[in-house]
View 1 (tube, rainbow, N blue to C red):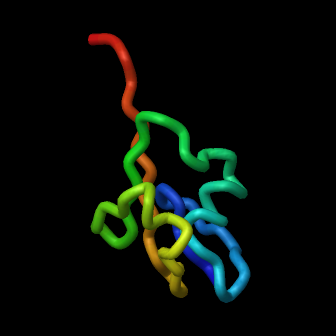
View 2 (tube, rainbow, N blue to C red; view 1 turned 45 degrees about the vertical axis):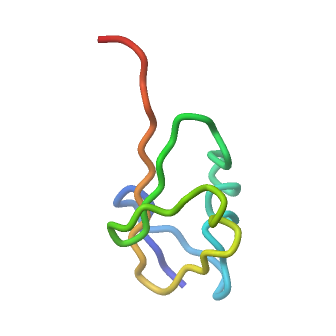
Length: 67
């Protein structure tokens, strides 16, 4: 199946979780990130149980320091 991670198409197995996607991309459980699927914020505690579907749009935002 195809999903989009920050507007980039990614190929995943048909029953992939949000956690699996983030882990595969090396961004699993980093501090200071927020994750949304189809414009809905998903809590970190729900990443493992959140199943992704074809054409889901996943947005990962990292907090930065500085001003």
